Amino acid sequence: MTGNVSEEDQARSQEVGVNDYLMKPVTIEKLSEKLVKWLPKPETEPILDEEVIREIMLLDEDGSTGLLESLVEMYTSDTPAKINKLNELAAAGEVTKVVEAAHELKSGSVSLGVGRLSSLLSDIEQLARENRLENAKAKLSALQSVYQATCSELERYIHQC
Image 1 (cartoon, one colour):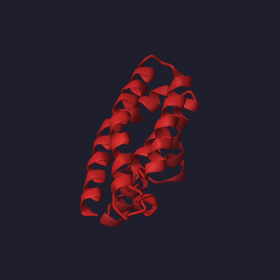
Image 2: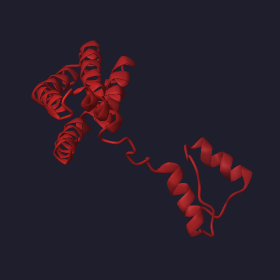
Image 3: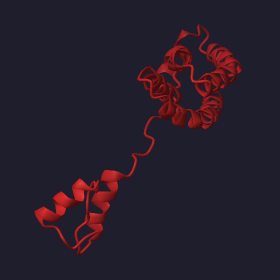
Image 4: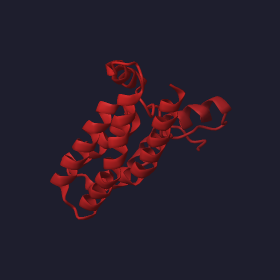
């Protein structure tokens, strides 16, 4: 926040790493614009892609949730071990194997309509592919909670059908 907004002051501020400034007098509108510009965007990716899930349910000949339930059961029984393995590979610095493991998990998640988790895994895969494993590890820290939210949402979806 500054009262000095001359071009010289702006240039000097940028030289020392200041990304932006808020000129006095501050108004709610100006502050709001800056906050929207610089704060991280909220999660907008839905947990489930309901279109994919509806397509899976259409494949079930008797119109029940049996196929979906079977796929969810396989997914939830296999995924925790795969997430643990992915974390172990990242901790060991195995970049190539992190890419492969994240890709495998992402593919299974996309097939089941697990949107937010597959998006997170896609980010992890891409960061590892770019050899930015530290950034991938930061995303990995959110993986377990997103997976738990996914399981809860899948269970809720099946029971509402």
